[in-house]
Structure formats: C-alpha cells, structure tokens
Image 1: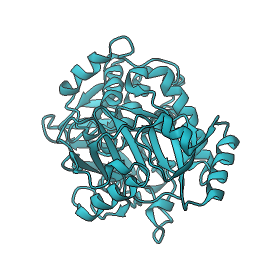
Image 2: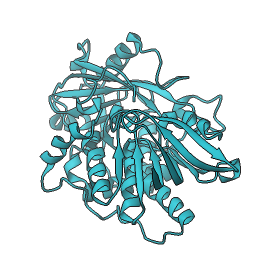
Image 3: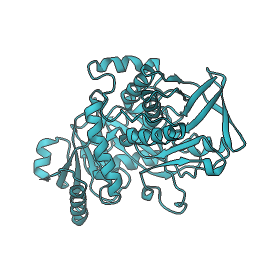
Image 4: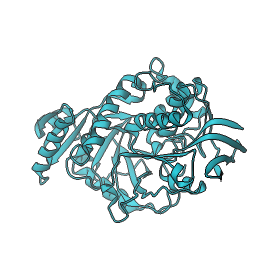
Length: 409
C-alpha cells in the first residue's frame, strides 16, 4: 500500500491530524492498534479547560487552552456540555494562591467572577460548607467519544482512510529515511509513506524506537472515580497547587472524581491501587462532602503523555502540559515526525502545528481550515453516538468501550 502521510495513533490528536491534512488535499491514512480514543483521550476526565488550571504556572499554555476553548465552542457544540467551572478556596487553603490565580487569569484575557461560599452553595447544591470563596471560569465538559468520532467522520469525508485494530509491528528506515511501516491486525499490510506521524501519546517513545529515534517520555498514571452525582452540575477545581483529588467533573447521572499522578514505566502494564481510589474520593469530599465514603460505580485509569527530555528528576505534576513537535530528520529519521504532550483541549492546535510541518515538508501550501470549519454532528448529535460502534471507540470517560476497567489501547 502507498499513502502520502501515515498517521499512527487514533486519539484526538491523531484523528485531528488526519482531518487537517485531508482537508488540505493530502492523501492520508491513519492506523490505530485498538479502537479510536482507546488511549489517553478516552481515559481523560473530559474537561474542556479554560486555561485557569495553568494560568499562574504556564501562562502560554493557559492562553492556548483559552483560545482552543473558544474555538471548540464554535466548531464542536455537539461534543460539549456548557457547565461552567469554579476554582474553590476551602478553609485552610492559601488565600494568596487564590489571588495569584485570579490575577493570572486576567493576564491571559480570561473573564472571571468571584463568589463567596454562600453564593456558590446557592448555585451548586453539592458544594460543602468548607468553601470560603470561588472563582468562576469558562470550563466545560467535553465528550471524548463524540469529539474523536466527529473528527474521524470529517477526515473520512475529506478522503482520509482510517483503520482500527491495526497495530504497527515495525518501521523500516534506510539511508536515513523512513521507508515503510508494517501493520498487523485486521489490515495486515506494509505501507509506504512519504511522511509518518507518530501521534501515539504515552507510547510515543516506544513507537519512535521502532524508527531508531529517541522521544524521552515520563508518563504518569491517574485514576478517575465515577460516583453517584451529589448535585454537582459544574466543573469543580480545588484552588491550590495541583494535587491528588482536586477536580470533580459532572457527567450524566454521575460525577467523576480525579485524579492522581504516579510515574509508570509501561503505559500498558502498571499497578492500579485501591489506595489511590480512596485518596481521590477523600480529597474530593473536602469540596463535596456527599461523596465521602461513596462506592465507586466504576473506575478507569489514564496515562498522561508527558514529554520530558530534561525532567528526569522532577515530579510529574511539574512537567509542562504543553506539547512538543519533533522533526527527526537530524536524528537519521527523515520523514518521521512526532507530536506529543498537550491535552484534549488543545488537540486541534496540536494537529494544526503538525499538519503545517508535514505540509511544509511536502511542498503543500493549502492553509489549515479546522479553526472555523464546524465538525459533523452540530445538527444531529445522535449521529455521532450511532457512529461510536462503527469506529470501535473505546472511551470509558463516556462509559463506552471496556467499561472503564483498564488503560490498554
């Protein structure tokens, strides 16, 4: 088989790259070893970040989140729930941190509103008495399953070919250039491509090694715990430096509590501890007392694709959540490109940057069209749900796929 660009990885970034390139008239094929969204995308907490979470620690990333938050509201309304979000200062939390958060949000152009605890409890029934004040921010809840399917449909309609259950088995490099990729599973074919895009998230290091190049990663696991919703209908964030159990995300008939951060050696095989589940519930109960002692309806574990070339000794939470785009030409891997890091909110921006680089290498001058071109499903959201099974979507965040039992992709 031959294609101009082969994209490896069927998460939000991978399908986003496939869609972007196809809209620019590039012949593109995507392969995913399992079902679409079966890695980090489908095991996220599903928050459309406003950027407030990163405003004081990484203002550039916060500004990128805010811009993409606005973009996705315009082009993907069928994939979102307009819940709003709050950062909560509890009794004993550092009030100066709250003020730094508020000032940093203003610095990136984000409109916020400050409420006292009583006002917030009138709005959100499940919020506890320990909340002293809150910062209202434009967070929302996103459906990873719908988002990935919408991008996959748009990519296919623009001419892309998508294969699931198609694991990459080897990558052939000769004379400093990627030549062909052997793909197993249902496809069982060798693909020749001018450019290969590695969009495999936490597996980026492993995929890159097949091409003989290095992508240093420091993936971390995190647990999400779904419990009966105690009356929360907005995204709640603890207003303190990132820590375990500092976010509550409303989903239909449940609330998802998260999360932890523990380094893992293998994103396919790692320990899942009951202690992390219990700690997450306990910490989130400080914001929402009704979840204390709750029996999880289900749990699922995600792995963050943290790119860490110089971060060997740092805690995973301190590693930037921005993304990296790597051209491996100087490493003897001409034609091989890796996009890694980032987050679900900025997937489109990551895909655009990747497609720009690929098109530059190919001599394609067509511009990106994804920032203002609506995704499918705006007029018929149920269509996206019907296509979930067709594309083999595996997204425990939406309650589809493996039922949230694991993190394999």
